[in-house]
Image 1 (cartoon, rainbow, N blue to C red):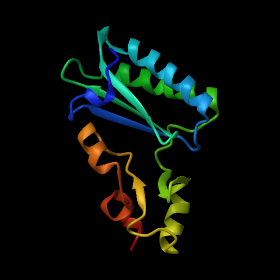
Image 2: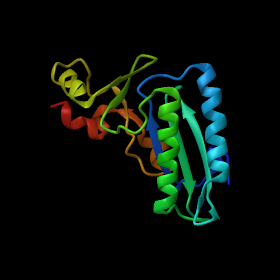
Image 3: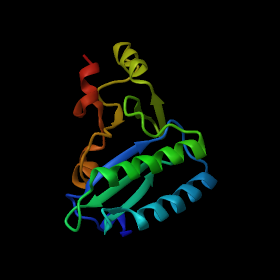
Image 4: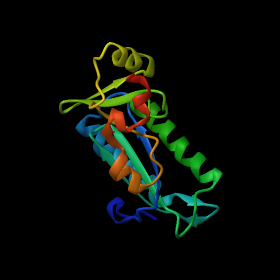
Length: 161
């Protein structure tokens, strides 16, 4: 059951899939349509899942599930991962690698392997105030307050010493 992402409960579960590159305008339109179609039919053992999505910065696909109606199951989570794998193949992108780091360089979103980010931190090419994307947030409330934060306020801070 497709719902407006911005109307879902603050406790709604969130999954963030970051792309290793920005999507083109044409790709964004296609991905939006495909994601809308997926969420419209997304179920857990035949029960509708009240969920929504948004695509941020032409790079992050954020899916939220309001678990007050029905909760995700292993099968429904597998279905969402399979859907992301289909997008990866269709657009030649990486959406499932959670080891990589995205951060802001001005208005630009940079994407680096974790090893490269660690080296950059060691060399002070990124600072405690560098805005990073904490894709480990678990619900909409955290997403709104702790997803896009200075590195010093995220798990990334461990590399800034």
